[in-house]
Length: 71
Image (cartoon, rainbow, N blue to C red; front, side, top):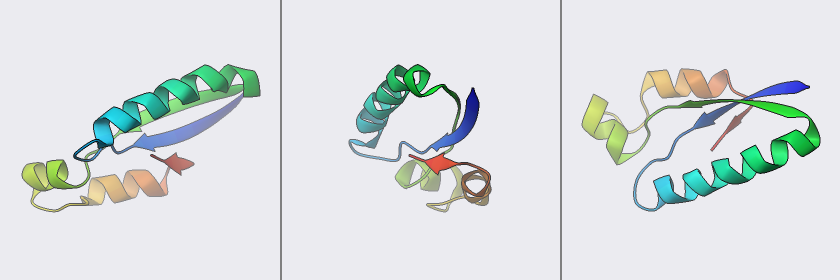
């Protein structure tokens, strides 16, 4: 089984709703492709700005660099 690191960045607006469904799809198909998913979540957009004063915090960028994919 292959492990893939996926960074989840729900963002604003409909982002959280769409991201939730995308994660559901990934979790559904992962076993079929013998994938193990390692999901982590970081803020981006307005949510990140409210928390940190920047729309893309350094912590989020670093997590993205260390991931196989970003949602």
